[in-house]
Structures are given as structure tokens and as C-alpha cells.
Length: 131
Image (cartoon, rainbow, N blue to C red; front, side, top):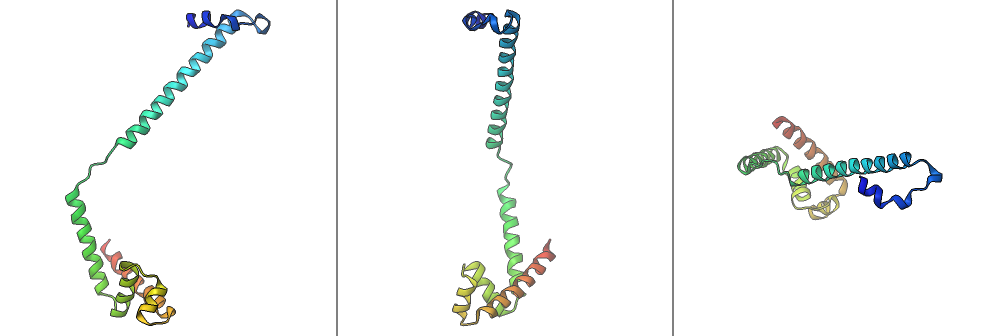
């Protein structure tokens, strides 16, 4: 601190205040800078720790759970009527829009929308039973 005061002595202006007030101002600013620097370093460390943190991952249990979920969805799809299952499968597994499903099945768009609404409602109810 004394070295810093010595180096910056040329900036002291007695018309703006006493030497003591100038010294206290320099000391205060240096203390604030240190606190801010320490806080910023701590934040950087916390951000880096969050980025580097990888939660434990149990691949086997994840695969088993995904397999069980797929099986449950298959069972629920089997509960749909053939027409509902066909529309839902084309839209959600093959990626067609409702309009494209209607074209592929040579049906009016409203019919496809009704089948989808009813089929998705039945799927929701069925999958809700699994939870």
C-alpha cells in the first residue's frame, strides 16, 4: 500500500482535500477492488465447477428403464383401434404432418384429426396408468 501511495503521489492535489483523506480514499478503492476481484474469482470457480460436474450415470438402469418405457408405449398402441394406431404411427414415428397422413390414407383432414385426437387421448389415459 505504501509503495502504491509513493508511486501515485504526483496525483495528490491539496486543493481537493487533506493528505489523510487522499490516503484513505486510495486505501478504500484498493480494498473495494480486492473484494470485487475475490468475488469474481469465486463466481468463475463456481461456474467452472458447474460445467465440469457430471452427475453419476448408470447406463444399465437407463437402458432398462428406456426399454420398459418402449414396451409400455407398444402395449398402449396395441389398445388403439387399427385406424387410430395407423394415423398415430404415421404422424409420430414416421414424421408425417396431419395433412400428409390424410393424403397417404386418402382421407379427409378432419377425419385424420379426429382419429389423432381420440388415439392420443387413449394413449394418454393408458400411459397415465403406468405412472
